[in-house]
Length: 208
Image 1 (cartoon, rainbow, N blue to C red):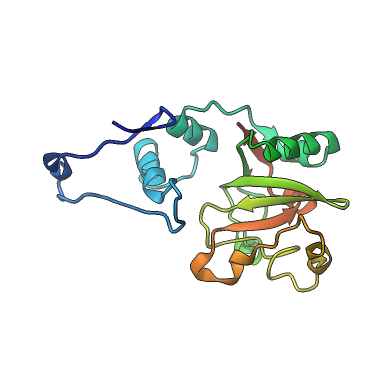
Image 2: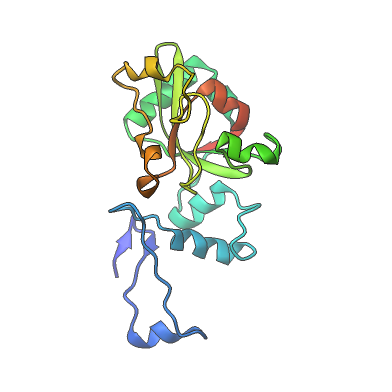
């Protein structure tokens, strides 16, 4: 029986086990990214088990991390306390550079009006993965991924931003533009946003 991180057990089903449900079908899924383990089937199975169907409202990122990996997340913290504090931001950057942390940040209901979702490219009541943080001059930049993939930040520093300071930032070697936004077939939900914009919408986070 193979195991993943000694926690997520995977078994090869016997022929008779494939037909234990009423519809006599076996549910399968794969990721659009080669080599990616986290596929929608895992997430949907979790939501089906602990919530009302596939409704993620009220399901916390902390619970999902624990049930799927047995990691115990640190307590929820205020995003602005980390991103606006130089010492804490530098400490977080160091942890990312050493691959020592996994961070989730959340946009709660009420962070902005519902009708602004498409305009901003952000989802209310959604938990995002914070993939990296870096300093570019006096700016603090965040690399974030939306698990829904198709919706990404559309304002300052985004691919849609024609009047911002993106051209200036692109001259700096460590700044990576979100080229995946150019092509719908390879869009992965990743985008860059600076800390000032992020703290307007992202209000809480968990660090593991």
